[in-house]
Amino acid sequence: MSAQASAGWKIEVVEMVIPPKANIIVGQTHFIKSVEDIAEAVVNSVPGVKFGLAFNEASGDRLIRFDGNDEELVRAAIENARRIGAGHVFVLLIRDAWPINVLNQLKAVPEVARIFCATANPLQVVVIETNQGRGVLGVVDGFTVVGIEGEEDKRKRVEFLRRIGYKRA
Figure 1 (cartoon, helix red, strand yellow):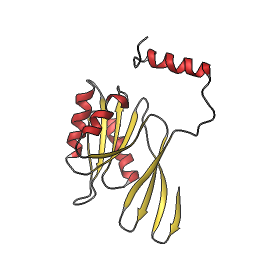
Figure 2 (tube, helix red, strand yellow):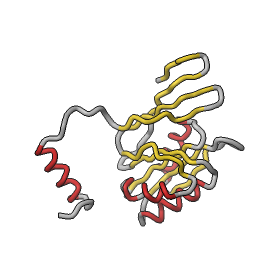
Figure 3 (tube, helix red, strand yellow):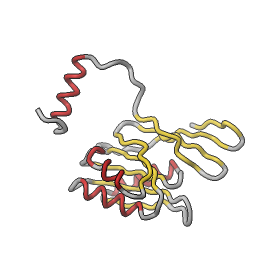
Figure 4 (cartoon, helix red, strand yellow):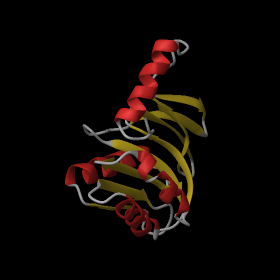
């Protein structure tokens, strides 16, 4: 879906492909070295994590650079990066780990300038295209809220966090 706002630019909503049981992290980084450094941060964060990583170069060869240890996730990361098409954007797909396990390490990578989102929800990336190129304006992560948490909802939230090991009993 796209909207033409003027002769000089357009906005497009780009659907991301998220394979089953995977989470996606979309961010912005500034250097070709990012591919190796992000990959190292991921594998050093969670033993046995499966991942696919793609990075769009913004100058030079302007290629989609990639890494990973799971072919399905690598292919999906490359496809998502291609769909976004904006330079200096990276797409990381992980499995057998939660984003919370890798986000601090990703933020500590010197080349990483921003994390747009980390989710397993359906994801849309809002992209602007100008005569120079493409850039990410933001993301639509999941769906619109429909209400306010009640006491039963609180109880379920607390139980869930304890069941998956992120809070003690």
